[in-house]
Length: 121
Image (cartoon, rainbow, N blue to C red; front, side):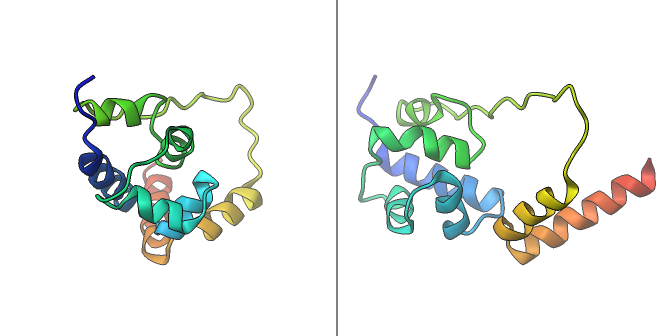
């Protein structure tokens, strides 16, 4: 491994969070870490402790090892999503989670996409 590129990691974390439409608060909540720690992860002046790599990867929907890959000059991988064998979904629970984590503009975009897909199916 070359010298870890901590400033690049901070930029990639911030860029991914914004791509997902997450606020720093919702991202830190998803990772199970406090907001100050998340802010430090996005700061080019701080190093993200190794114990926080997996929670950050999960919050950003990255696969395991993505933080190490970024630090080594590579790219993150997307997390693999397993297709459930059962298609029953608790729609109210999903709605509660989405409302609690997505900011207004991201929710509007999601709803528009769902309506478009429903109209075309």
